[in-house]
Amino acid sequence: MSEAIKEILNSRIYGIIREDNPDIALEVAQAYLEGGIKVIEINSCIETIEKVASLKGVYVAQGGIITSAQAHKGILAGAKLLVSPILQMGLAKVSSSSKVPLILSATTPNEAYSAWKARVPIIKIFPIKDLGSSTYIEDLLRPMKFLNVMPCGSVQIENIRELLNAGACAVGMGRALYLNKKYDDIVTTVKEAVKQAKI
Image (tube, rainbow, N blue to C red; front, side, top):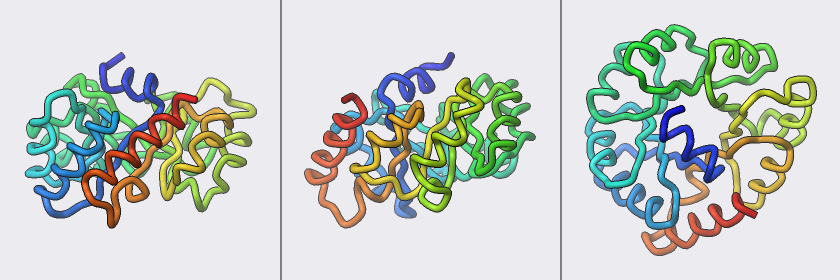
């Protein structure tokens, strides 16, 4: 098991940054790291991946991957984790050959099971807000308790405990941690999220 996957399973929280400006994304990533989040998803902007990957102690997850070409570029830029917003099984070959772990996304029980069959270590359940939040996680896991699922999509700090209690192995959080916040406020918010994930 990779160090990035171990960190997600241990901390139970996964940071997401959706920011087009690489310098702003780097500052947010620094605040995440200071607050206690070490695995950070960045969309497939190579410059941003390179900048964030330069931070000591951070595992960069390249998000939004649809094609193998995107994955190859991200790995060269320093990505330690590949993440697709869909069930893109073709990425499994890239993951295997590069030894960079893969997280695939699912919205249905069948997709989640297919990802598990493909040996995906963590399955991103997205968009959780629209799927029914913790109730959906409970329903999904009732017949398939062996799945490692990580709900993402508009997760708020007040949702963390209920999602983890429903059986999620971790939660993914993005804009709720940083949008319209200054650096110190981001750090404070991240620390609270990390605390909630450990209770």
